[in-house]
Image (cartoon, rainbow, N blue to C red):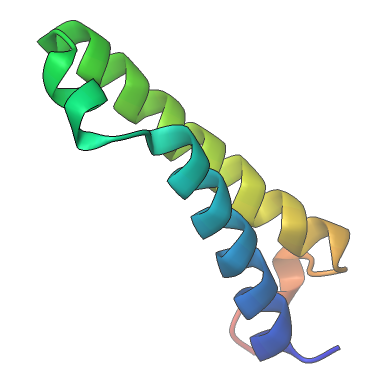
Length: 68
């Protein structure tokens, strides 16, 4: 599998997760600043885990990112 389809699959999974986890604008506006910060940190961490987890599951390794 080439790099572009792998990256596309990882982006789709990450976007779906973030869309599901983020919630509505009304929910965000009702949160306190501390809650918004915590929720944003969870979204960022979850998105990163989903993205790199899919890449790892599809066979991408660290050495694939290094320039040759």
